[in-house]
Length: 395
Ligand code: FEO
Image (cartoon, rainbow, N blue to C red; front, side, top):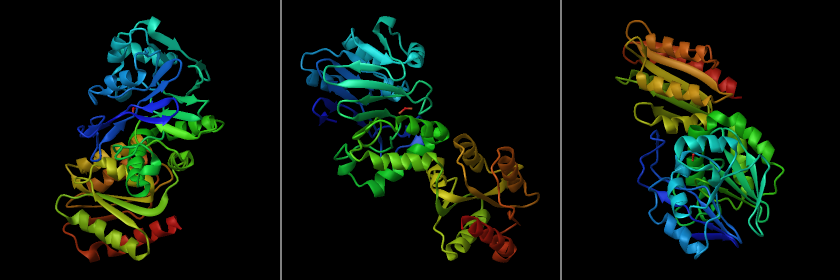
């Protein structure tokens, strides 16, 4: 990806990655991901965050081209996860006098990953400053958004916030790096919510603290380390605020695990009942749709119905996988309903119920169970009761 000037002194020098299949070897990337990196070319020079190792063979040449013979004075390390820090050894190799800017936690983690001399480290405190000439940078710790050392960098001269993982999203930057040059509603917002729920959602409480902490800054542009650069920062701040407050829409997500189609038909009947009551319903087979997408819809929807067949005395293993992700991500303020089928002892729904109870997720009382093959009359009464309970709770 070529360099793009974003203000009088700052260049976008990041990379698109369409090769990687799974982010963190876990989350699918059908639309790829970008590793955003920024170079400030003032009297002194600073690179803000790097890219994943190997993502762009033209990365260092691009930086050298902009510097045009100047050296790189600073590498600002907002976050140590290797998707941003992976090129540190190469950057230090090319610019041996570069000072890596970070906080005490950054320095500790840096030593775990790279053989970097203390002389190369420039320690900054929360609220600390660094002048590059006309550009005055300040640093603000935002722990656990996404790791304990994470901080953001604010260009107080141009009013730009370099926010690292915060305000990021999946998806490569196609055609434009800016929010103003892309179709936000149909593509990026959905990929941003999936990124948020999969990567950052667990730390929503810390996101709220970070938003409160940064609210005093005048921000004209947000430059995250994944996804779009926001010329309209209010839009993305609003989305992150909504998601980190667990504010969801009055819609229903139904996720089911089914071996022979009986639990699937239960899911469809429940979906029809709720659809007839006027609710938008999104239904997923957990064995078919990656948990990444289901978590994103759980973040979006207020009502979550989980269904499973019985499997070796427990819920189906793919439903267990989804439950584990729910336990990790801790979506809040949801209405959970349960359903499922079995042949002899109802172990699937029992273990689903036990999971919800043990992990403190409140469940509607109207659990729907069915034995043997699907027949509408076997579950119509209990299904109707669950649909009424969901609709009442959504009012
Ligand atoms: Fe994009 Fe937490 O790294």
